[in-house]
Image (cartoon, helix red, strand yellow):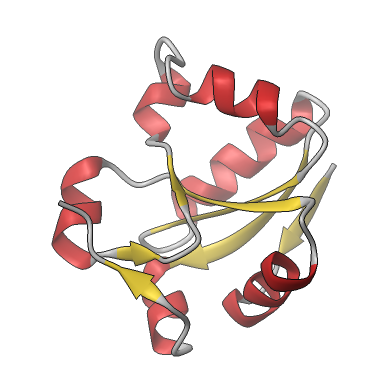
Length: 112
């Protein structure tokens, strides 16, 4: 069930108060290195979901019962992924772009 868009602040609140929510950055590795990522994010590129799902498959098996909160650079890819996962029966929400997370003053971390 796709719950539509939620703000980065709302996503962060859900992650703090709710062990049944998980945040995923669906951008690609060069993007993670260039800008950093949301501190609580799991890094799973959309290209892996579109391909052989080596990273996505085990993640989805482990987090099937959680709400999956997704973001990318501007919100487009995360919206696509949220809809695709919702079609598989998962609970999702689109958090938008990393820029929005960063501008909201929420914690970020660098990726090597």
